[in-house]
Amino acid sequence: MFTDKQMTQRERFINVMEYRPVDRAPNHEVGVWAQTKERWKKEGMNEFSIQWDWFTGDEYFEMDTREFFDVNFGMMPDFGYTLLDKTERYEIFRDSGGIVRKALIDGTVDGMRSSMDTYLSFPVENAGDFRELKKRYEAGLNGRYPAGWREISLPNWKNRKHVLILGRNCSTAGFYWRCREWMGTENLSYAFYDQPDLVREMMEFIADFTIETSKKALAESDFDYVMLSEDMSMKTGPLIGPESYKEFIYPHMRRLTDFYKSHGVKYVFVDTDGNCEALLPLLMDAGVDGIWPLERVAGMDPVRIREKFGKGLRLMGGVDKMEIAKGKQAIEKHLAALAPLIEEGGYIPTVDHLVSPEVSWEDFQYYMKRKMDLLSGRPVSE
Image (cartoon, rainbow, N blue to C red; front, top):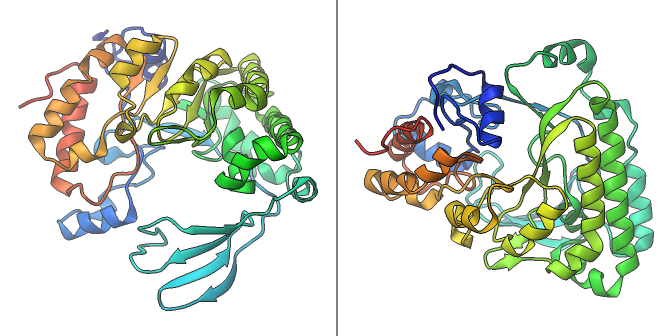
């Protein structure tokens, strides 16, 4: 698995994905809750020594660099922000996606809430609502791409040494994700049965819109991967059953992955929290190459998933954030269990979600130090 040859970050990533030898596995991470950052500052961390955009990379922790080409796959125009009611304890507002939400004020740090909002209404209830909403998704708008991208970004992509991803994290919304944002989880669950024609229309539109919005970039350059955000699972299983997935989503996912791969995207990943195991055979058959973030509390053990699904499914994530909170010995034991996957390839370990406030600054630094040992094939215990 390991070689003494010094590699570029792009070579390192592709070799891991192709199960070829590397100087070390890529060092990627996700991020932290604002509440975690506040704790670490109290524990002596200098917040200005860290860059905080961990998807792109962070020199303090020797993370590998990734470039996310910032295509806007969202509404243009969006709904904006409208405050509807506010008390000392909560506020009710309509967000940019047209969702009316009730949010608890207590515990909020830098705009990040410590508890989930209550969702009161969504912009789509029926086919008429959806057809009106579609007007906000015109694919060909110049504003969907960064200004000057051809002159500034494109020349640096031709012989790049870093990994290039189409779309920022959570921007390239998948099928379930986007429909859930339009209708809400409960309403969408009913719609599969009560309004199947509407669901089919939405799924077809998502594929069409994503393809059309991506074409301009793919005509000019290849990309190393795209991450389709889905979040279609809960702790014990998916929010959509395999039969419904196969009927409503699979044909359009197949069409989308075929398009991406025929236009220079090397890998297609899916981002979903929770336990998506029951959907993995369909995802793989639809052309999906990998899954992230392998949430451990939901039973997504990357070692077990590799044993069950084989090398055809690349893996990212799988480090239990709660194990990091247990101290050095627990960190060493947890990382050591992942060593066989690192040796085999096709796997990049990251924390399985944002690092929680239960994790101390000392323990997180120790985790990152020991993880670098894991990535390099060295023992993870002192």
